[in-house]
Image 1 (cartoon, rainbow, N blue to C red):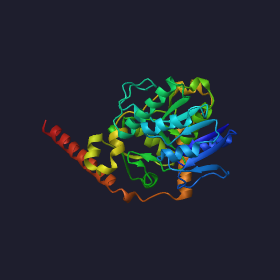
Image 2: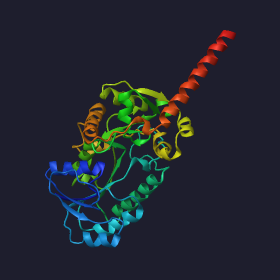
Image 3: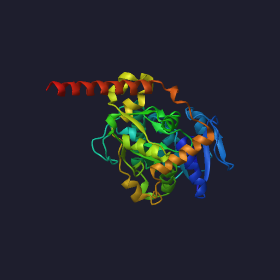
Image 4: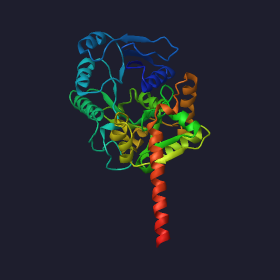
Length: 341
């Protein structure tokens, strides 16, 4: 199958292109040509700016493809442009949305019927784009499938903590430095290796059962933030020096510009069912365990030397020290109270 990938150089889309090649498909990439490709195969690439709708339409005109995997639509206007450009020109359109369309969850784990009440601009824009595609599927039958990934990780990006994809995290673990964990460590989180995410996208190609449907494309393992970091450290042969704090404590002591993801995503439970995807896309199975995925990612980090010193983020030590002093003072006050009883 000849598959147009809108993107093709990002963390998820690189894995998708590799999966397409492994499964015997012919990927064609559309992107700005500014990011390096991580493929040994010679690929057809169309260079352009997705935001230039007129130029995009010209470049897509006459480009014969069987399916489109869209990693570049982030708002309703771009979604409407895709419907206009691709209607009647291919027979399957796969759109990468996000679990951020849900916002704080009303049930654990959340299925695809979870109400959409996004709290971030990113989530709101993706939700509006979804609505455009859903309406286009209803009339005139635009053949769309929507995927909602959560935490995707793997070779190509550093491991993630509450500060984002963090190049200091492995250094901190290896040196025994503090790891600040939100929600007192009991918030739920659910990672999925990018090669497994690619199984879902590529495995859905051409499956009629997926048309008009949305799927949570997430891993099998849901764990507390504390456990998430403990298992991460064990995968590296270390013990995690975890400091649990409330989200409000972290927000009060960390640079505000580094707290966007904590405020919008990480302070809430992130736990979703992937049962519908497993039912409709048999290829989405045998998902990689968290420790193995960590090892694969860190091997890439070591090879590419993307690590940074722990002191690049000095506020983490300040937060940890402040919390330690607070707990020592509470303990002292408690013991003094017992002595006076």
